[in-house]
Image 1 (cartoon, rainbow, N blue to C red):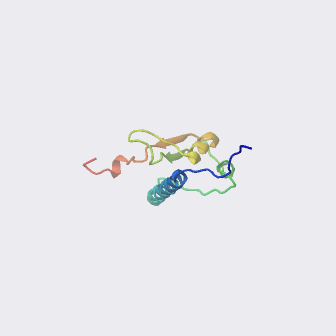
Image 2 (spheres, rainbow, N blue to C red):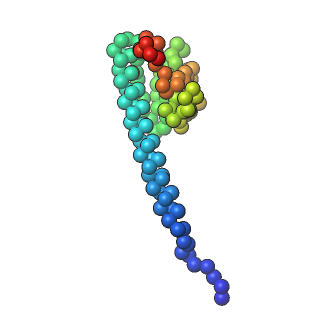
Length: 124
């Protein structure tokens, strides 16, 4: 009686895929850490200068956290594009996309490499 075995040969392809996925996660984690640090530093500078305020909201999801906030009509949400975007393009990750769909105030997206004119060096 002809049959098939439950064992399949993959010639190492699955191991290569797993290794590539691990490398990709490492890159994603490094980019995330860099972006988070940069954003935190810039936010601290803006709050110290009195040009911005920060509020931390928590929830089981992005939507829940945003619903916990009391929004005023004159507020905006400022979101930086992911560093994964090609130069001159915007790329929104999953969290920023959810924020845009849920936030009851305008959402402004800036390029990840944006520098305010007051902070630019003469060479830029």
